[in-house]
Image 1 (spheres, rainbow, N blue to C red):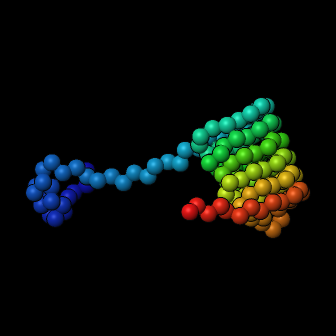
Image 2: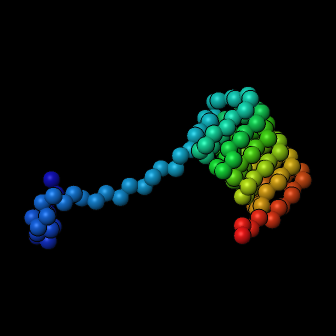
Image 3: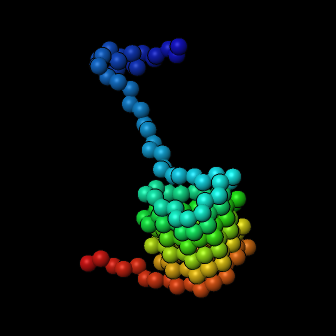
Length: 137
């Protein structure tokens, strides 16, 4: 058991009811579709989603982030606050914030977003509409 210094002992003796303060970071709520999973149909939720498997259909996570991992493949229309593509997507994407296509990522489909980032080496085949962020009065 670790030994307490004199200053730590005096702090504890001056307040015997004191409890040590623990700093706890809140984990990011994120669902994961593993690389061996195949889902056909609509996937929706109220937390971020990481796709490392295959999805065919529609992905609706308005207000949250959807990440297509390096093993991920989505033949789906995606609606989310933020989309990060590291794997492969065939379908249209609508983001309320931003689309990020990483260097090993591939998107074949149309995009509607406020911001977009396409790294060198990424593949983007389709139309892109950048919409201005609406200002609230």
